[in-house]
Length: 630
Ligand code: WTA
Image 1 (cartoon, rainbow, N blue to C red):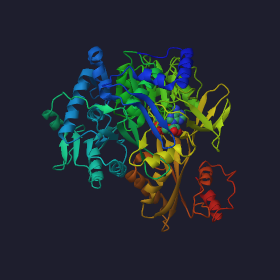
Image 2: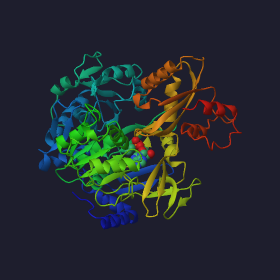
Image 3: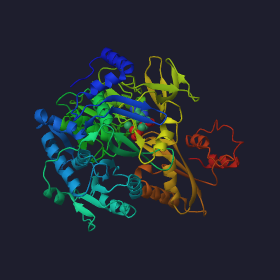
Image 4: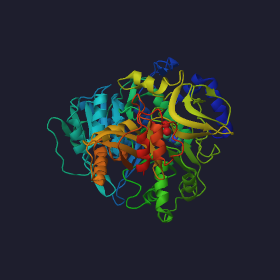
């Protein structure tokens, strides 16, 4: 496996990748199986935006994830599955078996009318069939849209409608800790408003009693009996969309980020191999759900492209107790462990008694993703999990980038706690000031942008190219804007300082404040709401909602409970507000715009510098809000 092996080599590769990006990326792309190689490497223009890589190339990504490994690694385990309950049976699926299962399910999709270019929604638990469904879509050239299993029926319906999906793949339910969640019932409710869906394919997982709708719902285990395990991969163009994944933005409606086939493959494979320094035989575990980009890129595609063994875990870190992650690491002798800072902080808070019983001596590399990691959590992770023996890769990237952008290379880059360190080869960051001027040199802080394309970058937002332009390319002309603030210190190390727009990272999940407000406003007594983030010890950021009630309600506690239930119903439990304050009015300018800056300060309990409030329509609301702040 080709990897960078020293910091000097990283520096040389970086230099080469900037001076001759086309040659650099062609070389990375050479390793794959192509039906036809590309005619030209890159065509781009950030104004439209138009980005194309490996133009004219023909391939199928599943051939590179599966068929390519069959001769040498056919009997190697591709997926290790650890169930929710520690006493339930582990599953191990070899590359040969995975190949056969993917082909079989691809034939099931075809049997049910799926064709190249169709959108297929996947709403499933963290079980191997989720990965099989994803790969089966890619095998036949259908575009998968995985929706996180924790989203509510309404969020699911919005995503199915936006992508105009014809098929939904789901399961009867999912085990999570001591609970089981009836996924199929949520799908049924969503589909009441999704006429495009003609078929649902249901995997029997928890064996609960569910209702199958005639002429619409079929069982996975029935369908699989009608098909063979031969399925020739569909020939895809480099730029054919591989998948859509919805992410939150500053408007109330999530954006369907569209990724291409070849560019995605090349970026994800390159970053997986180099960042984690995966060695043949290593057991690699990424704890992210496949419903998020981390699960797409570093649980399914990245490891399989590299011929790795990837562990998939159905459960939660605190069941049966807060030592579960560490128990799984010892049980499967995990070598590389990749998780989120919020998980580290919450397990740290539970105490070392949950870590002590485990050896953790198989670990070689630790990773984090999703939000800035605070120094304290970094040290706890380093000392108690890595035993000061495992390099920590703090990987910075986004749904839109598909792959890691700024990160140490494990064991190669000297790390600093809280710093994502340096851009990977091929990545050209720029820090801009508020006026859009690029800040040069070190010891600067600005807004993080990229000035040159990389193969895995977002191509469009599904069904609305203008929105893609608006959201990422219009703020600073000629640049892709991340929405994050960033520092470059005196040694040139990058440190992400957090979002500078109207989205909040709650436990590593990106939530648009407008989306949460829309959900709150579904409550019949709420006329208006404003949501901001506030620093939270475990979650990174918590949700603070200011709400205006139509009819004065004396039973404030039950109203708050109802608001939480409403948000859970319309968005999902991840968007539940941590604090709710009932207010008489919101600080608005004369043009009606909510001054969120003021609300953010109040939510952070910082009343010192609220700025000029005299331009507000009604400055007295601020005093009122301050008086009731929590
Ligand atoms: C944040 C997750 C600091 C950032 C892969 C980014 C991070 C957003 C880091 C994307 C990190 C991700 N350090 N912040 N290592 N990784 N972020 O789309 O704000 O769910 O813009 O992708 O997470 O979140 P998304």
